[in-house]
Image (cartoon, rainbow, N blue to C red; front, side, top):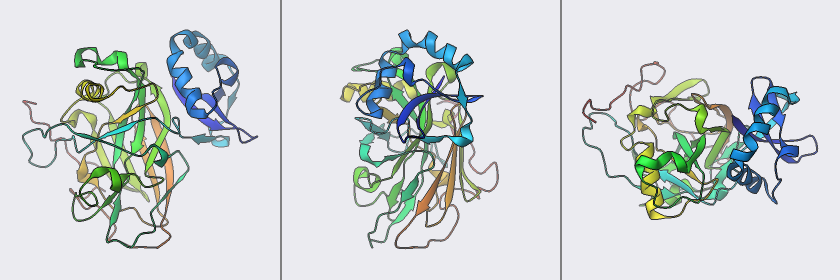
Length: 310
């Protein structure tokens, strides 16, 4: 199943199922929380009991045509967004780097159709996209071993880890949190695909276009540290709750600038596609194109680099 939040004609945010027929409202079948985030967390917690009814609604419920529905971020304010630093085999690299993560600001979340707004600072920054697979947690999850990782994973969504960068790959200043936590810097969506929709999270194609130019085009098989290890690492550090996010990092070879007036499209195999706009009040300009890797207009721009022994 693919779970969404969508905006009704009355401007309410309602839970739904994204089906081949359109979006089915499941509000009457679930507990509506005080906030849309709590509604989705309740669905995650009660999913085993809800599943038969939701499957019936997916088959028989009234569906609204997708083009008539405004999707919102499926998790509007997770209590934790953990994001991997790097985590992909790149260039001629032949040894995996140590696994590391940072916390990204939960208030930075936006959803499909929303606008990435570049901050009004005059520092010499460039703002870049990082299209990533994100794990949606079913909690509470603490000290989950890699061999038992599936019990802590409810499903998957996509995240664009928008980043303020100085020179090269260096995130602004010395840490990842500050350069990655401006408002609107965590687009999530378009849906939460339940775990059974994704046979192997380490065999998914991720693509990202900027004004029609293909930039990211890579496979999650190229992760240095795979999903089971990410779950173990994160839950060793902290308790993760239902609706929390672990974003799996990106292949940096397709990075390029985001700038005023651009439209970006993000697609994850088995999960879906979403489009966002970019606005810069300061109207800054950078050279258009890819700053790391080959010419990404070529479908083979980002090749797989995982060593055969890894």
